[in-house]
Length: 208
Image (cartoon, rainbow, N blue to C red):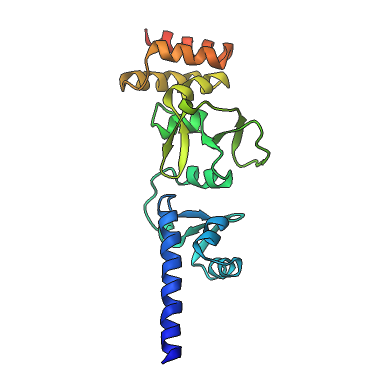
């Protein structure tokens, strides 16, 4: 009788542990970190077991994903969540990647652009890192990651010399959808420097 009750209790604990981690991962497109799994109740030994047996997909160092989510249709921003977790929540999707996230224009960068704080020390060749301390109003939250606002994304893209065709198409759509105004865009470009001002002025001029 004691053994039976003990087995039921162990099963309940395991179910509760998985449910806790699942709730965390559900808001992150199925991704979670080793630290989040540990907080949910999984020992590092248990984490290795689940990864080795295919219950969890090992995406990166100390980053996993529930297999069930990998089988779902892609929503297009799963990699944004993955890189947000890689940075421990410090990276913001930015530049041309932010334009793509906002579905503005023809932006389709081959690598993801991330803006990280100036003090950020992690490095990788898999993404393009930009170091800047963003103001609170320069980014907005999504499910599992943050992305620069359309206004900031346009100005910062111009500042790094994004293709003019990309800028013009993005500016045109942002204005048409009421996401920005010309005055605010010009001001944002001023804050990002002369190169941004030139690119934005050209993009606006092409619409006249």
